[in-house]
Length: 126
Image (tube, rainbow, N blue to C red; front, side, top):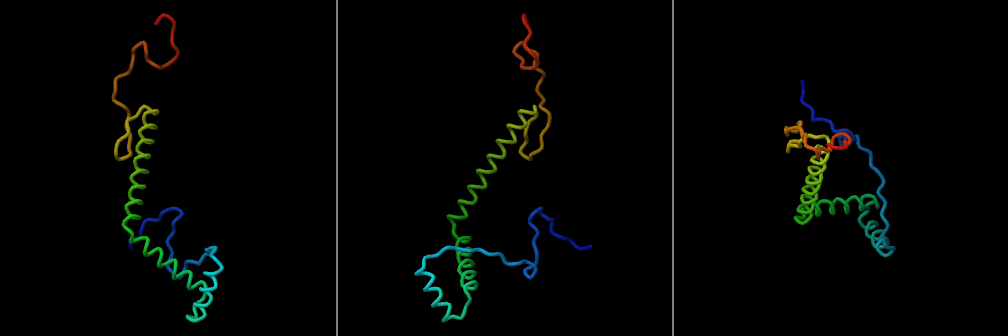
């Protein structure tokens, strides 16, 4: 039996030859367009080849930018904090305690039998 990577719904990874290219159109200044047309004629590259090369270079440069990495990690930390707060709020509504691992259990506090208890309707004279 061979091991396979777990599948993520909506993100099926296909081998390079099975992925089909998609259109990614950009609007550029007419002067830049003329420069590109002139240069690609000299290099004998297609507009698509030039665009793919430029975008690959940009992605590579951006992925190695420390400021971008720090921003991405800060956004992940903020999202994790929001999710933890949401989990705690929902657990509080359900009368459960939220744990760091995401599992929740029934709260272990004693039942509240005081007159200020919020269960049921208030009774006159109680």
